[in-house]
Structure formats: C-alpha cells, structure tokens
Image 1: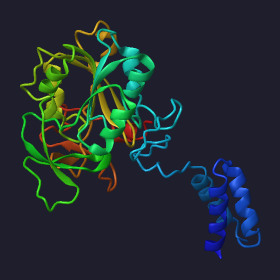
Image 2: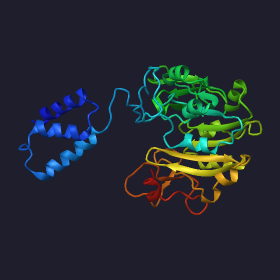
Image 3: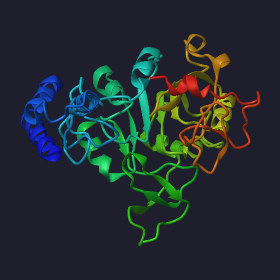
Amino acid sequence: MLATQYRAVREIRSSNSSAPASYLILSFRLVTGSCVYPRPRVSIYLSIYLSLYLSIPRSANSTHRGCTCCACVGSSAMPCSKGSKGYGSQGGQDRWVAASAANTSLYFVDLAANDAECLSNTVRLERELGWRGLCIEPNPKYTARLKQLRSCGLVQAPVSSDEREVSFAMQDDRGRITAPHAASSSTPGVRTMRTRRLDTVLDEARAPNVVEYLSLDIEGHEEDALCDDFAWRRYTFLLITVELPSPRLNARLFLQGYLFARNAISFKLHDTFYVHASHPRAVGLASNGSFEQLPAHCSKPWAGPRLPSCKGNNWFYCCEYAGYPANGTTRYPNWHRWRSMA
C-alpha cells in the first residue's frame, strides 16, 4: 500500500518539479488518505521525511559534489547562470579573493580546476571581474567543459615535484595520483599520466611573476606541488587557498613569507587561506596569532592519534598529524566548535 502511494507522489513530483513542498505533501495526504495512518506520531515522522525529501531539487545533473546548477556534469557545454546553486566556490574562496585582491596582476592559477563552473574557485573571478588565469586539470571528464566554457589557459596534466609517469585515478572530483609509477593496464579507472612541475608550467604559460591567487586542491599531493625546490623567488602568490594543508606545507609556506589568514571549515570544506607578506594589505588580512592546524582524516596513513575533543566513532577529520601532537606545539581547532561551523 505505502509503495503504491509513494509512487503516486513521485509521479506528481516528476510532472510538477517546480511545485512547492507544501503542495506535494498535501498531494501525498490526498493520495494516502487520512485513515491510512491513524497513529499521530507516524504521521508526523512521515510528514517531516517528505518535507525534507520533496523539497530537495533533483535533476540528472545533480550528482557532482552536491552541485545542482544546470550542467555541472557530463559533456554538456551549457553554462550555468550566476545565481545557480553550486556555481562558484564552495566556501566563499572566490568572494574572499575578490575582496582581498591587491589588483596587481589579476591572474589566477587553479590547481586542480575540476569542473568549469560547479564549485569553481575561479569562474566568478574570470567572468564577473575580468581576471585571466591558468587552469590545470588532468581529468578529461572536466577538460572538455573547461575548453568550451572558460577563457583560462588549460594544462592537462597532474602536478608533482618532478616529471615522471604515475598512476592517476579518474575518480571524478576526487581524482588523484595513486602510485609513483605507470599504471597497470588491468587497473580499471586508472591511467598512466606524466606529471609536470608547477613552476615549469607557469614558465611555459608565461604567467606573471606575481600571481594574484593560487587555488590548490589536489587530494593530498599539495606538498608536492609547492615543494621545497619550487621557484619561490621567481613566483609569488599574493593569496592562496589550500585544502587540508599538512603541517609540513604550512611550515614551508610560513618560511617563504606567507601568513595565515583564516580557516574555512564545514562538513565538506577544510581550506586554509594565506596572504603573502608583500601584499599591500597583508597586515589587515593576516591573523597568525589565531593559527590552528586543520586535523587529518583518520583513515590516512599520515594520521596520528584521535583528537581528545572528537568523540564517538567518527573517522572524519578527527585525528592529529603523526609527529604533530596537540600538546602546545601544534594547535588544532576544537572539534565541537569547528564541526558546527557553516
């Protein structure tokens, strides 16, 4: 009985996807009839469930990291509208960069760019503010849309500390280097790709020596991109955002004149923002005194003990980095505080 009624509601949903949730819930009640669920508690729970489920926009293109803008997956070249959900940064990176820019070069480097629009840290800078830049993305699933919908230069290669053949997993927005050697032909979803050094890529793209913004998110290989022997003296990034920077990468950036600005933390976002000391507004943007190391994912090989404030069996970002304990030398955010931040 319930399955039949549920299918009827789904038919209403598919035929009138723009209808408000209240209308759809009323439709459910009309289809089911008030006598089907005489117990008030069951009716309340069912209404709450339907309110949540039916009010969520759904489309064939809504599977990409929660993005629901018009064409965020696949090979479609239809651009998203500026007001579409999922268009632009996930955690306000683009807005922070726009408000903090020194307007020196208005040049960005997006590594890895991923989708051309959905949760992109640079699409707004390019389209709405007239910035130019370089998009680096090895996954061919995304490069077609980058070519069609963006004006940034495009480099189709993974980035590391040297140039060599590696195994690269084509795992949508989680694509990454999985082994420092060529892939086996029998491994599904893994390709052999040749890495490039970031400074070499910048040289070939004739990037300015002062880059306004670097967006860095390459699934745990950020240290390799900004390695010790990177051309630090030749290239300066006035603003940087990095997903889950390790303690070693933080120490390297601080040594090279980068200052902590803030952490952007939520259930799905864990970025640290930096400003270079040469930025004309560095003093106002930096907040080194409040620096906190973002915790490690407990399933990663570099994870140490669980943070004391992280309760239960959660394996999310709840662990110290091995060798960087929370004993005063490394300060981690209080789990209960940052976990609830939007």
